[in-house]
Length: 455
Image (cartoon, rainbow, N blue to C red; front, side, top):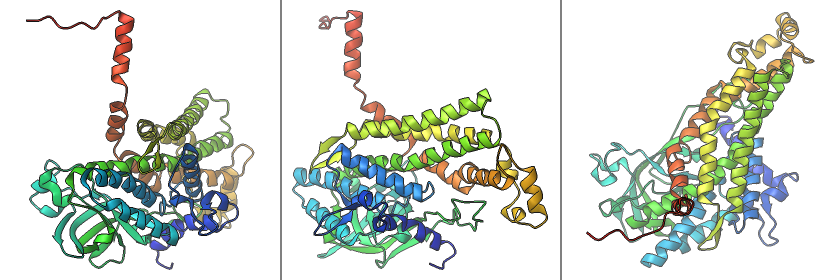
């Protein structure tokens, strides 16, 4: 807990665990099984109500995390639900026995309340080539050896969130595969201290930041890693895919569709914070009657309400999938994520416009406590019914949200995390009932279906 960078990430990840022991959040965070109480994160969703409670838990943890999701349970349980769904289909179609292994791992993780990370995205090398076509065969994680007791894997993954805080790492395929790629069809779970596994941490958001100037990023941080597998041994009990290339795409997508619901759930506190700080600054600056400012606030409110409403609808219109999981509606989840991702830059622009140039030119927190300069700043930086220090505190928060390393982090995540904007758009559009729409157009136009003339 003394490390200058990792300590803040450890304290941040602990938010999920603290909620489970805080009477204020226990009902939300814990399933009260008299024999073995466990985290709600490990509850298999069985209904729209379960999905909404999961959403509320994720959102509350993110709110306590200052708009940064703890993710230490969220992403790993998304992976487990995706594995349950995809291995059921795999066992049914190919006679494998993976689903029992997934169930055993879920029970173990639930009982011990494991912190989980997920490694999915391969480094990919030359992206014009498929895994088996790469000049260097390790550009996608692959099986290099099968032994009587397990498999040996080699390669690397990127964007592995919270891995340095986790007990276990779940590894998933990143794309659909062909028969020539079968050695790249691999999924498993391993402890993070497994020999041969190396986590290379990103320095982004390392600070140091002053508490007052960066009220969020001085306390809250996720660590992302480049994750290197140097001939790592995985026992068969923890292997969930072993060369069955036909199932790789299904397994990759099954995780993503659960994780996008989580993704939008943890965006809600950020949208609320943007709207809240914008409204504060409007009042502090005395601009409540300015038409263009009111339009900007309206846009922020409608943006937040739309994302929230689509997510609610995705839960209400979810569906049962085998082996007994209630999955959020896939097109609507992708629509919610798409609407969030494509709207965030404009939302940041509104806050920047409202806050003004002092987002990046304000005096420092040290100046505010200077015995001579502090009183001067407190006087001259006052706003409507607010002193200079309080106005600066609101500006510091706005700066942390929309004009900082944390702001860049949120913006990049909006574009790339949980799948690309293009993937979300394609998934939603593909599910549109095109046939029904065309039939209705034909009905309105009076078009009768006829056999084409014989030539």
